[in-house]
Structures are given as C-alpha cells and as structure tokens.
Image (cartoon, rainbow, N blue to C red; front, side, top):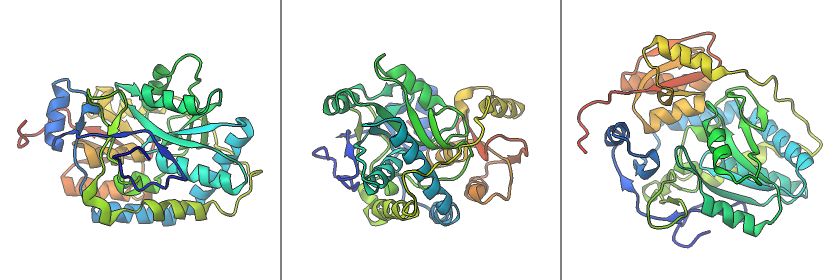
Amino acid sequence: MIPGLPHTLPPADVTVHLRAATPRLVTVGQKEALLRRGESYGTLLTPESRPSAVQQEAYRGALARNGERIGALLAGLCAELLRTYPGAVLVSLARGGTPVGCALRRLARRWGAELPHHTLSIIRGSGLDAAALAQVRDLHPGAPLIFIDGWTGKGSIFQTLQASLPPEVPPLLAVLSDPAGAATHAATHDDLLLPHAALNATVCGLLSRTFLDAQAPLHAARIEEDLRGDDLTLPYLEALDGLSAGYSPDFRLQAGPRPATPYAEVLAYAAELGVRDPHLVKPGVGEATRVFLRRRPAHLLLRDARHPDTRHLWELAAAAGVPASVYPALPYLAAALIDSAGRSGDPL
C-alpha cells in the first residue's frame, strides 16, 4: 500500500500504484460543460454517491444470476494465462480490472502458482501511467506483463494501452468479457453484467476513479471516505473466491467466436438517433452502466428490454427521463449515448 492512500484492498492480493491527491471536484453537469470546452476527462472527478437501491439490486442480482458462470470465466482465464505465460505478472487496470486481478491472484495461489498482481491507472486521452509501469518492471525485470481488465466496450482501452507501452512491452490484455473482440485473451466474448460494473469504489477498496494533476508523475486517486459504511470490497473478493473454488488448473473454456466490428454496428444505430460523434457512444452493459453513473446519458439502446442484465439500465433511464430504444440485432446487450448538448443548472 502506498502511504497516504488507505484503501481497503487486501495487500496480499494486490500492490496499488496510485498516490493520494486532491482532485478537481465538479458536478456531473460541470464536468460535461468542461469536457465540451476541451478539458481532459482525466483531470476532473465527481464525488461518488452512496450506491442507489437500483445499483445495489443490480450488483446482488448479477452475483446471484451470473455468479456460477463468472467462477468458470475466472478459472478458464487463469488457467489459460498460467499455461501461456510462465512467470507472468498481472497488471490490472484500475478500477474495472482490479477485482478481477485480485481474484485471479487468489485462484492461482490456490493452485500452487504465484501470480504477482499490481494495479495502476490508465486514462483515455492520457494513456497508461508510465511511472507506475516503470515501478512494476523494476520489481519484475524480464517478466511477461499481462494487463487485466473486467470487460471491453468499443476497445478504446486496448488502443490506449497499445499506444502507451514501450516497444519491448507487448500489449497483452486479458478480460473476463470481451464483446468488442479486442482483447488478447478473453474468457468470453459475450456481453454480460459483471457484478462490480454496477458499483464503483465500494467494490474496489474505496478508490476513486483515477485522475491526473501536475504534482507528480504517478497517477492519483482519493479514498471515498463517505462510503466506508457501504464498502463491499472484501465480501466481493470472497464471493469470487468461492465461485471459482471448484476448478482445477487443467480447466479449459472456449470463449466463442470473436466478434467482427461490433462497434461499427452500434455507431450505425447511434447515427439513426442523430449521434455521430464516436466519443459519445458507449457500447456494452458495463460501459452503459458507467454512463448512467458518471455522465449525462441522452439515449439507451437495448437488445432485449426484458434481459435481466440490463434491467437496472431500464430503471435508471426511466428515473432520469432518458429515452430507450430496443434493437434486437444490437451486438451488445446495451449501449448508451452521451448528451452532447448538456443541460442548464450546473454553473462552472
């Protein structure tokens, strides 16, 4: 644990390469206005609220409904990484990849293998934290680095990873759910709701979304102190541990066919609704959920209005007065369009 950042992630599961700092705090409305003026998303932070009843139910429902499958996904991915990369080091991308990396490390340890796990920041438009990456490489010279995330949306994180890494470090990305077809290793290419996609800091050690400032090269985070009473980090990791307990390292899992340009299909649907800026189109149930929690959504696209993995999105859209459309051929379970015009009421 880095001094000054009292997260609640178990030190035996992960080394956190983030420093404590005070971010520029803004409301969602202020953030949208600043982004339209050209500010970097990586310099702005909106404090997290307590998880709503809809979020909590989405988390519990996903854990109960998808838990057995998630256990298999974790085991299949862990076994594949151990077979393919002897002596590998896991480098999870905070925050969506951090619980996955912790679960993989625990599972490998149960199987008698050592998979060191570090988590660091990657920010769209700014890239991977180069100072943190250097720390990891110094600790594990010559070891293959496997970058871990929870899911893919349109594949932009993989593109950012590719652009950020030095030539001698290959962009090896491993995820549980890869509907974009972008990851090097995927447990499945299906779009599904991972439980921690419904929550944020409360399943990731109380870490805020990572951000940048000018004080030091290392990316920063703050602890969401107001959420300590809602922290589910340890129960969530223990639940993942139990779900993967029945598997052995010879387990193999087929990810299914890799999707071909699924994002292009989503862009076509978005264009029908008048949105042509790809930065405003967020496909995948995980990314769509993030839009409703962090941004100003303008429209929700669903493959199936009755799918249990998107029920929370339907409810969030209804509560916010956001229109929803059903496209049975949508290659993802859901996609969210971000409001490009913004709304009044949030002064800068």
